[in-house]
Length: 105
Image (cartoon, rainbow, N blue to C red):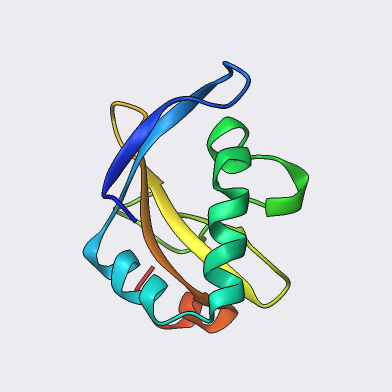
């Protein structure tokens, strides 16, 4: 997965630019193939509408210095991200729901 992407979707709909942290890339490499495939399939939808109901996107509570978001890939798998000052989505981590308990968002 390349580090930086963005701009236009299949139907000419603008999508947000994005990038992956090293932590995200490492975590993604450790996921089962079906989760990796599902993330890649749903990525364009997410970048077009990160509040699409299927993602159940919400802010992670209890953080004082950073605003970090979580979104659902499945009922058991989540990914975390930030939104950069320029609007770039920065994917931080991906894994089972327990990634939210490790403070490694």
